[in-house]
Amino acid sequence: MWQTRPASAHYQVQTDGTIGQLVWDRDTAWHAGNFAVNTTSIGIEHADVSSNPWAVSEACLDNGAHLVAAICKFYGLGRPAWGKNVFGHKDFSATACPASLAGSQHAAYMSRAQSWYDQMSGSAPAPAPAAPNIDALADAVIRGDYGNGEERKLRLGANYAAVQQRVNEKLSGNTPTKPAGPNIDALADAVIRGDYGNGEERKRRLGNLYAAVQARVNAKLGY
Image (tube, rainbow, N blue to C red):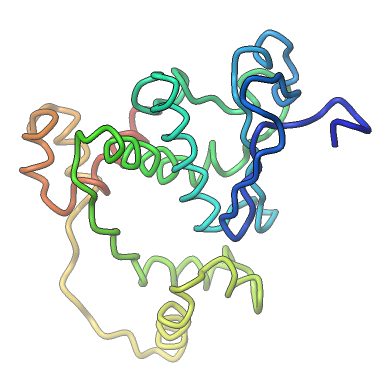
């Protein structure tokens, strides 16, 4: 692209999660629309899987977050934090980019980047992947958030069969009751009040809910 117009990025993350390097880190890319920022930052482009609403695939989100963590670790930038060492295109130019990564998928993206960074830094054990909320995904599908046909399959990935089955159950009226899950929102408020301490104490007390609660805390605090 840089050969025909002044636009480029150091890295591109594709929908299937493949990462390609387009410009060497040591060279200047034209990604921010701001020369000073271009010369002091590394630009990453994420391929959207849909528009209206804009969204990236799970593979793109996870590998993009992994790349952010690796860059922060390699260059000694510290734990990924939005507005500190991770920025969106719209922070420097009049644009909606990076769309969902600064909106509906922001909390998940930053939580994932921080989790990857913690693993690289040895400050946290590799966490077990969080189980997807099939019920919530089914509701989103019914609202139309995941499109139809091949688009839905692509965006849901490995969760497609389970989510589609739940959609069918909901639409047929077969909605078995189940115990209510933990109130992540209430736990996040408690964390912000300081009820769960910090660092390892917070991780120990929240157990397998830590990642979900911390992501909600970050979202509430605007990280």
